[in-house]
Length: 94
Image (cartoon, rainbow, N blue to C red; front, top):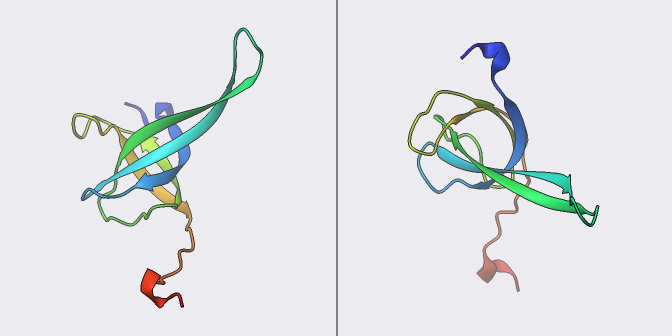
C-alpha cells in the first residue's frame, strides 16, 4: 500500500496488557438518521507497539499497515500526549 494512501487516526490507549499490542479507542459522533441526535460511537483498534512505549490513558497517533496478526492492522506512529498518573498505592492513603 502506498504511504500517502494509508489511513491515520488519533485515539486513546485503553489497554496495554499484551506484549507489543495496545488497544486504542477512537471516539466519534454520528447523527442518528431518524431522531437527528448526535450519537457517540467508539471504535477499537489493535495496534502494534514494538517498543511498548505507550501506556493506558495516552493519546497516540496510529497508521494503517499490512496485517500483522489476525486482528492487528495498525501500527503506532507516535505518542501525542502522555497521561499523568500518580504512583500512590491504596494503603498509602491515610
